[in-house]
Amino acid sequence: MFALNVLDYSPIDEGATAREALLQSVALAQAAERYGFKRFWVAEHHKVMSVAGSTPEMLMMQLAASTQRIRIGSGGVMLPHYSSYKVAENFRMLEALHPGRIDLGIGRSRSYRDVNAALNESKGIKVSYEQQLQDLQKYFTDDTESTHRFRQLIATPVTETAPEMWLLGTGEGSARLAAKNGLAFAYAHFAKPSDAGVQAVAAYRSNFRPSKLLQEPMTIIAVFVVVAETEEEAEQLAKAFDLWLLFVESDTPPPYYPSVETAERRGFSASEREKIARNRSRMIIGTPDTVKAEIGRIAELFDADEITVIPNISGADNRLATLRLLAEALGLPGE
Image (cartoon, rainbow, N blue to C red; front, side):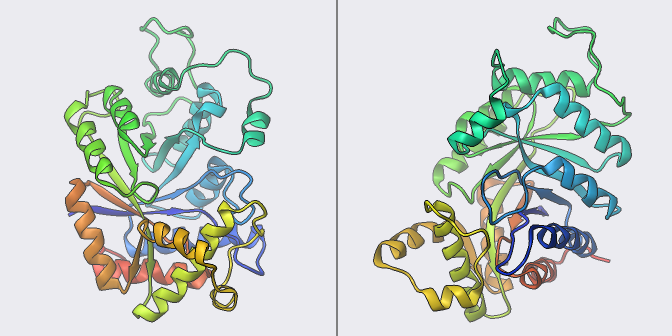
């Protein structure tokens, strides 16, 4: 049986504020813990005004302090923008305060051009992505024996345990990079739901090399879910999700996640319906039993250790209900 996790974007619902969205993320993490989910991760998005999740490390501190057992992580830190040394210190600080509960999910940014420029304008020499991953492993293991360019440098605070490192990806390149460096691998099925993903995860498993931080391959498959008591309610929520995705891809997206009522009133053009049809392949939509069956199929297809659900739907109450319905359907060991 696979473990079940949550990835939260901190969506700003229509009529709500960013502060309210972040507090809703705290409440969602607490609910995930009560219901028996294993991990609760938060995302890093820049210049997406309809979500409040821009700095996962900062939000993780609040989430970890507001929960007791559930693992808290980033999904993920966009590593090429940052110093590996500083990322290691941030996550060691989290690990020191919440030992055995911190996950460092790492990704590569495909952000807006001006965001990339602003985050990197003071940089000189670029360090390769793989080197950054190896740097993090050096800092998390206090390695002063290898021929590292900062061999004697230790990331503080020194901790007895290390965060789990997960490489996030959408293809075989990332899968093989995770395998080569002995990292756990999280595949973004919600971004690229195709047979190529199955092949990428299989390549990860067959090419995995143990590291000081991980002896056996570990996989997560991440999926968008839209769950409600009835198919009709699920379809209403899915329409709002459809509209949000269209907004995100537009030139002038509004600074909020549209409500079900807004999506119903607005309707969609013929070209938008074509985009929606393509996007629907990225979602699992339906009643708890329907979604449970599809999650089970995907877990079996990928031979997944864990499944991460992304309940990026309109309404804080609906997001809470999604976790409750899935926990009940899948028999999670809640309180």
